[in-house]
Image 1 (cartoon, rainbow, N blue to C red):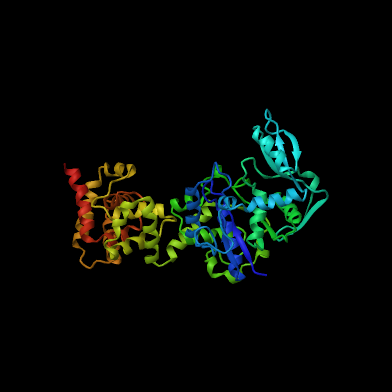
Image 2: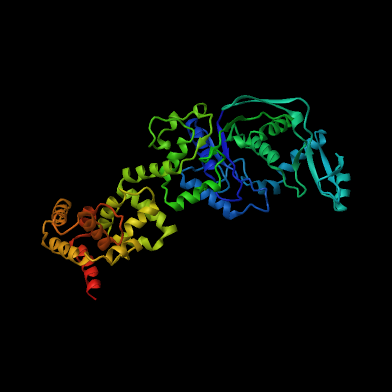
Length: 468
C-alpha cells in the first residue's frame, strides 16, 4: 500500500502549533514510508476563509521545512486541492446525489419562521426546488443508520460508538457548500489517502465519516487521533496561555530548527532533547507516539532555541537572524556590511540569549555610533563616581597595545582592584558607558570586540557629557 497522508487546514486564521505538530508527524510518516504528503485547503467556510490566511499557513509550513508533494500551488493528479474549487467542479454534488438516489439522504426543508426547524423531508429534487423558490432554506441530510460504528485507532485501539447518539448529518449546507464531514470523506477517498493522522478533537467526527464511507461503499483509511497539546493548566492550549500560532513564535525570535525540534518532542520519545527530526526520519514510528496529552512549555521551547542558537555555525545564525530582521527590524540589515566584525559581535551575544528578539537587543548597541542608554543605565550615569571611574578606565585602555581578550581582562581587573574603586560598580558603569545597557554580553569580550578606538570614543562621549 502506498502511504498517502494529508494536512488539511482551514484558512480562517494562523497556523496553530497543534496543526504544525500534526503536519510534522504526517510528513515524517510519509517520508519514512516512501509516501506522499499532500496539502489540501479546506476553505468551504466562505465567510471566514481568506487567501491571506492560506498564504500565511503555507509560508509557516515551509518555514518549518514541511514541503508538500501535492497541493494548490504545486498541483498533482488528484486536484484541485482547494475545496472551493472542488465545489465549482461539482465533485461533492455528484456523491450527494448518489446518496439521495439510494435513499440514504434527503432534502431537509426548513420553516420560513424558524430556519432551524425542519418542515418537511423529501428525496425529490423537484419538490425541494419548489420550496427553495418560496424562500425556504434547504439542506441535504444523511440518514444516520442503526447499529454501531466500530474502528481501530492506531493510538487508541478499538473505538466503538452507538449510532443512536448521532442525529442525521447535514452533508450539504443551504448555500450549496458541503459540510466538513462530507467533504473530507469525498476528498480523502478521491485523493487515495491511506492514513488520517489528526488531533483527538476530531475523534467524534470519525464515526460520522465512517458511516459515509460505508454508505458510499468506499474503503476507509486508517485513523490515528493524537492527544491534544495542553497549556500549563492542563486545558487545550489557547491564547489565554500565550502565543499559540507558528507566526507568533517566528516573530518572537524562535529559530525554525528549534521550533520543529520542540514540536517533535511533543509526543515523540527520543533519547536526546536537542536533535534534528529531519535526520531521524528512519526512527520515526506512529505506533510509538505518546498516547497521553502533552504540556506546551514555553520556557522549554526557549531553552531549546538557545541551545540551537549557540551550537549552529555563526554564519548560519547570521542568515537566520537577517531573515528575522527583514520582517521585524529591517534597519538592522545594515549591521552586516563588515561581516568580520558582525561575526565577532554575534559570537559573544548569542552566549546569553535564547531568542532572536533578545539577540537583537544585545547586538544593536555594537552597531550604532553611540548607544542610547536605557532608563536603568541613565540612573547609573548620574552617580558621583562616574567621572573618576571612567578616567581610570580610559587611561588603562589607552596604555594597552597588545589587543586581545586576555589582556583586556587583565587591565580592567587591575583598575577594578584599586582601593578607591568598587569592582561591581566599575564593571556596571563600563557596560553602561560602552553599550548603554546594564545587562550585556561578557564585559571583557565586549570591550575586545568593540575594539580599542571604539571603546575609547564611547567612554570619552560620557566624560564630555559630564563636563558640560
